[in-house]
Image (tube, helix red, strand yellow):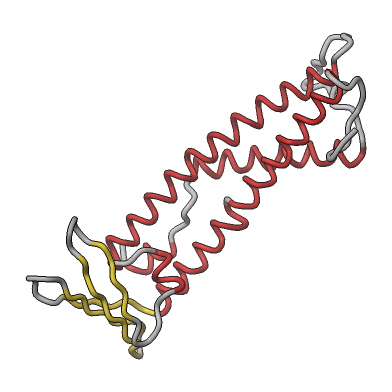
Length: 201
């Protein structure tokens, strides 16, 4: 892969995207039901509905809670794994962490980075016409140099921002909010004997 291919690669992989879509779909249903005060217990799936029991609404939200909890755990698992793999690819290709490349690179910047145990590496950054040039100095070692382009930096910055917001962060947060809605619905019907609101009964 070229440097551009590495810097422009998506962070969240296919499995993470699948669980993200499931969370978005489930969260949309929960949000609509909450705002319209519709009953989840009356919803049928493929012609199958819950039996006519006293706590049908609480049972429906309990099933929803279990499904959304599983999807959220799997998104966190695969999203975290994809995040670590992407960071490793960036470090191997550009010699810096994505956060350093995205937000700390500036002309004349000097950064101390931890290398192997008991070794510190001093890296100096310079802006050049095609991008960024760096030189590294370590005790008892010859100096090393490298560079990467402005396009690589912008790709990494926007991939990072997208992952932390629309690609992973917001869907995961929306799922957590809907988990809270489900728990409040379950407790409202089982313990308080009625339909709750988000912040109370």
